[in-house]
Length: 310
Ligand code: RIB
Ligand code: CA
Image (cartoon, rainbow, N blue to C red; front, side):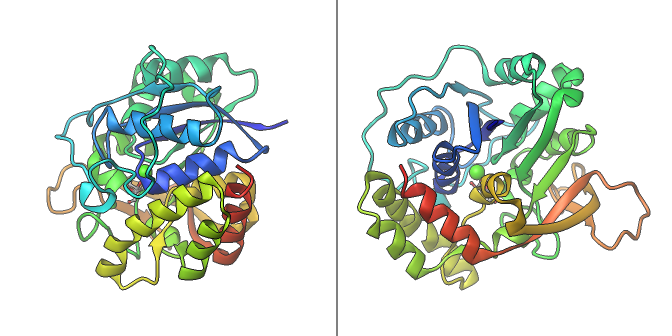
C-alpha cells in the first residue's frame, strides 16, 4: 500500500520539483499539500503549489493554505534566490484550481488523528504549520509515523547566516518545538543537500524529456541555480527538498546516523543554528536521524525517470 504523506511546503523551485516527484511516484499517496510562507509570502506559495498539482495532472490533491509568517518573528523571504514569483523559470499559467477552505494546521491535526495508518509529514519549508499543529494538539505526535524534513546544517554551516539554514532561520521557535516534540524525525540538512547537485548534463536530461513537466523543471532549475553557483562555485543547483521525497521512495540512496539536535532560539548571532551532536559528545539521547550523504547519480536518475512519467 502507498505511504500516506503530507507535504508542507513554501514553493520555491526546489519545493516544486519535490512536489512533482511525489505526485509522480506510486509509492506515495499525497493526502494533502499544505503551504507555509517562506521562500515567498502567502498567497504566492499556495498559488505555486496549485500550479504544480495542475502541471502534474493531479487536481485531485487538496491544497490548504497555512501560516503567513513565523510563530514569533518577522517573516524573512528569499526572492533573491527564487525570484519574485517563487518559481521563476517555470513559465506556467495562473492555476485554475483553488485552495481548500480549512486552514492547513486544522487539516494537519485532522489528518493525523483520523489516519488508520500513521501518516508521514514532509516539511520542506519553515516549520510553522507543523509546530502549531503539535502545540495545539500534542496527541498527534504519537499518531505520526515520521517527520522527514529539509532543514538545518552542521559541518556545512548555514546558507542564510554563517550558521543557520533558511527553513530553520525563518522560524527557529517552530523548529525548536518540532525537534523537542519526541516525534520520529529524519533531518536532511545542507550537509546532504549540497551533495544533491543538478549538473549541466542533468539539466539537459530534464529539457530533453520534451514534456511540459520536463520543460518547466528545466526552466525552474536553470533560473534557481544562478544564486548558488555564484555564491558557492557549485556546478549546479542543490536540490534540497526533493531529497526528502526521494528518501521515502528509495531510502538506500541516503545514509546518516541518529544524533541529538538542538535549535538556537535566543542568540541573534546564531539564531536558527541547528546544533548537531554528530560525535555524541554530550551523551544526550538522539532526537533525529541526521542524513549526511546521498548517491547523487541514483538520486538524479530517479528524479529524471519520475518527472519523465508526468
Ligand atoms: O535552505 C533550503 C531550504 O530553504 C529549501 O527548502 C528551500 O526551498 C528553502 O525553503
Ligand atoms: Ca522549501
